[in-house]
Image (cartoon, rainbow, N blue to C red):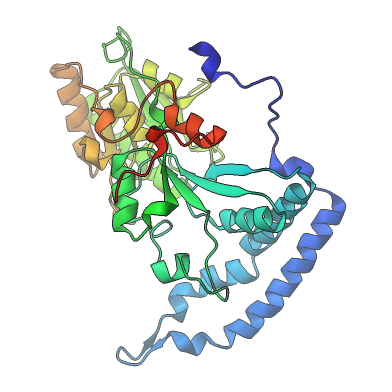
Length: 370
């Protein structure tokens, strides 16, 4: 079974930005200047944001994002990403199948465009975690996603690989056609908890997991710091930053140490209790391991979590977290791992993935929801 988790010797791993050249930067700069020119012409239509009934303009709400998208760093990054993908896929030998992580991020539009103009085959977007019903990145107007016209049509993969019945049902209810969905195993959650994962160790370790936004992360750290004083917690407090965020060392309070584990799963296994934000799906992994998990709600964001179906504990502030720490310390018990099999497909021999990658139309890969 271990061989199934190893990459074949002929597989190559590469970072896209390792292929940046001077010529490619110049092409990105050229496209950026074109984008700025289009943005200047588009800005004249800001009167379209005037609401006659409210007698107010929505322009002040969108102005900052508009400027960044058309003239700012985001605009240039998008131009660079497009040219990187085009250069990479034009040089890549024609591939019959491509798979990428599906979140409908802006860079994905560049990838889809470059993949198709490069003359490659079928493209599959893999929804690797849960799919909240409120994710507007994934749930778009069906007229944009599945329009037969070419003008203004939103770029989307040929199919979306879904990792379980809940994801499939969510996408079907959101307007995704059945023939656009294909079933695969939830590879992120395949490794099962083992005996001892949810037993209490002699050393208490509170693991604090950061979010991709520093303002939210800073609030989580501040709430934990205050809760530790209230609850008189004497264990180790370890902070692990989100992989998309650069950790600012001088922002950590005294008594916090940096997590040194290679993966988040390793860090979770050694933790006694976990605190994280509402947005991260890492809470599912913590609950799967049977760890007491507290989610810090933030009134400045949409308070919902990918893990909400697994019944985590919500806290609004330091007092709520302190009460949770005291309850855990005084009445500790092993937490039951949630039954992930009702949410995800978890076959270890990956029959669905094997069928997808080999082109074998096995029954495991047939579309089930009609």
